Image 1 (cartoon, rainbow, N blue to C red):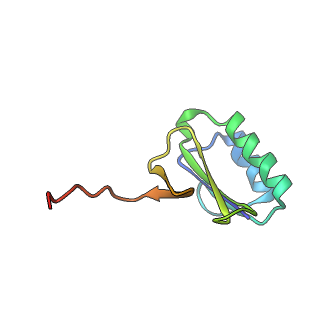
Image 2: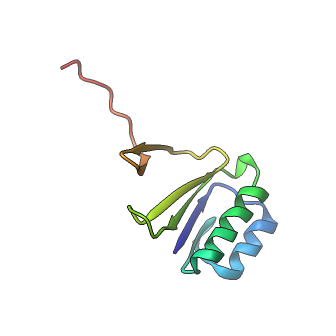
Image 3: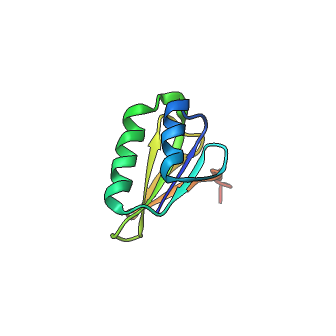
Length: 98
């Protein structure tokens, strides 16, 4: 499975994505394509989307934790990795001095 959430995809890329993906909301694409097709889609997105597209790609993976996260350009959310687990940072908490 692959999920793509983008800020603004170029029209040509968005049109190609609609061939294989369901678009439940604007610039949100979901598909259950095979891993080989998913890898091709990720490579296509990374090579054809400008930095301004600012998106994030969630792709299923046979290795733990079962998914892989890639970014297109500079996404709105920050990614971090803790013990090999890729996470999306929702909110940074400042230390309380304790």
